[in-house]
Length: 95
Image (cartoon, rainbow, N blue to C red):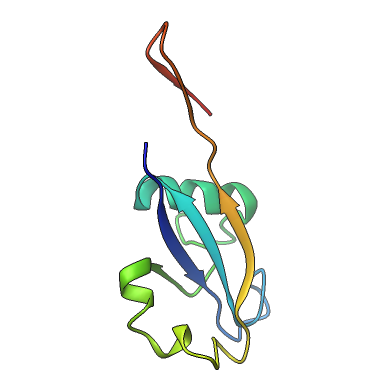
């Protein structure tokens, strides 16, 4: 299973996990990226991600944040990766 890169960005709100910069999440799709992010940074408000915005890699690369100045002068703060193993005998997915 191929993983995609998603960027979870932070604003200047000190309630979010970080001020500025972003978290990279490697996941098979947007929904699983959000679940992985929530496992590390739970919602403070139900059903609202604890970050400013979420971008796919191709979307993020079009923003000014991707440039040398980063996001509020900061860049990647952490990387979250889903490790997925497929059990061939039972054809299930183990997280």
